[in-house]
Image (cartoon, rainbow, N blue to C red; front, side, top):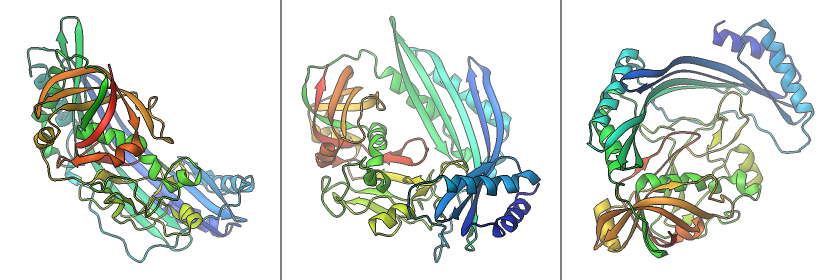
Length: 449
């Protein structure tokens, strides 16, 4: 059945029901995945997924339901299930169906040409990437993981208050893991790129990044325990920010799961630090003109010159705190309820190159990888103790490789001890949000060998 016809008929049925207001959320997507190993296709899939959710306010309570089946039985099932769901809700939280913003930014995040790239072209690119990586250095023993994934998605929100919005985007992701061998020791390194234009996919650079990442850690040794000035490389700094990004959610502060509760308009970080949430970022992998509730999105400074300017809000959390929503309602899929998430969430770049940051430090450590972020970091207290690897900085220059160390500290303290910020902003892989950071220098952290 045509999805537009299905939605129109569902609206007719819902209008005759006992819901005060109601809304449908439709999403669909096409995805491609290929993994190659030793010159052959090891794993391959092409998928199409779609589904619709219905939510409505019944006696002041919000009920949810969803389906992947668009047949005649689905109409009553969606309405009845949402109503039954609303009846069992006991909390008295105010619920919202949004009538719409005054205007919405026009975003073109869909590249038709990317969807027209043939499966053969993608497979050939993956095979070429594996070959270039394997031949990138004599020490490369094997290539463990060569993957290309692409996907496109459509979202539509329509509700009983007259809101009717839609959005389409797509992207392609390429990833490789190189394995260097040194005696009995195996060392892995990775490279990746995310593009919206297939012609901009730089297979050679991805291979070079993976090879360099692996080979550079050969002869790595530990260091003496102590306090060290730390330079977090951009990808690593982004991983750390991602681990603690939930502290900026008003949903978490209201649940006492963030120490930033009540800290708006107070200093929480070094003056040089600005953190931005930009859902309108050109070519951003999490850019979108409206959030999961249909609120128009906008660019905002979460932290500005060290001052917490705002938390991230949806309509519900904004009502609780007596503020306006920041347009950060998130709906991970048609199956999900509404929560809060960032979009393109990142630390604003500074003006120093990576080499200049090393010169400023003179003596210290570069951290290029953190392990155990899920188990070794407490997102509420901010405490972390993490396995790490990287390089020493000697006389202002990147020097010998370092491994088998543990760094420990507190994220809230770290924010206040950022001394320098690099110009090399880089985003990580997109998920609920796309989080990025330039390289950053921290006054000191405890290092154990």
